[in-house]
Image (cartoon, rainbow, N blue to C red; front, side, top):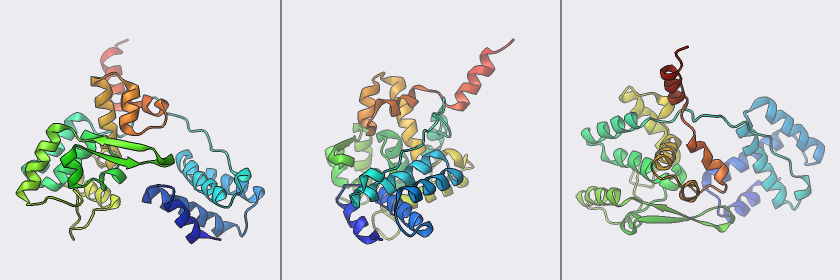
Length: 268
């Protein structure tokens, strides 16, 4: 087992910390059940995953193991992913009214650091792992360029109105450099720290915790953008999707919206 060397190899692949941790976890889980790697044991591990997890989790684990096989130069042993049945609706996405309520509450309570966390998630479509990488210097230039899988550059634009508002906030705190979002110790905030505190804020304001999580605001960005500007290829680029098929989900309505339409229309 060469976990540490594998981790170093992954670091050179321009992968996010969350992805690396997920891949390493998968390999450790495999070795906790099997002593060596061969096709029979790999298939057995896949069966174990299918029995215990949802399809999305299964594929994430398999992706990690496949990366490890690539590292070992055993690509012929790679496992096929399981098919994910796509839902015909978006689920657990914060509504525009709840988003407005949330950010207005934060602003009224002068909780500006978290007001801007919520604003940046919803107005840029950034993943939380991308959000924590934004620096004040990026606010100044109006965008951040990030390297993604395969060495591609993903540019996240910061809207002019949000840039202007952020500069006023930063000026009032006499901040001119470094990471935009900090923890209590003045260090770069973690993705886990953001997710955890958003749940605390949801409870404080009696909001539905199921819709207050980082990716929910990214979904809101996608949903709102496609409703105002019908260019799905552009949205795919803005969100960093490899395939337009992934972006098509934003053409769908949320389950709540579907229910509302059915209740309004069906009278027979």
